[in-house]
Length: 199
Image: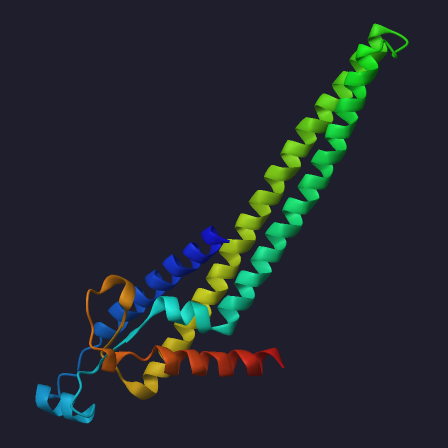
């Protein structure tokens, strides 16, 4: 869970950083010479920048919460499945040990066959656990990409109307005046879009 949440944060920070660079690279056309005073006054005396608090975005964005919950459930189900198989294997191993100590096998060959069967079962369980872990990692990467795309596409659409020159994330900035924080507005609009897409 912590790994998934950390991965979500890192991906979101990277996505917002790239978007910030894209917004910052927009230059005025050669015919349009806009003075700093005009630009600032068109934003109500504020600079044409904004920032998003990544932690708040991830904790309030329903899509991120749903993806996180889905991933946690998958990991818990995988862990429960592995634990159940491990319990069964341990029971069989204990059974084998008891039979071996009591000379319950008809021949040493029969004991050897059972031992090899249990060894293979243990190796299969380890392989199964590794496969589930790999599948979960791939699923996690896919979910992160989906969320990253969702946020990126939304921010681009959002900025067509708002026309910010740069949208920062707070993760890589030491201080930004809170008046430039658009997190709540972005989260509200993202959640509206996500809710309507689910219907």
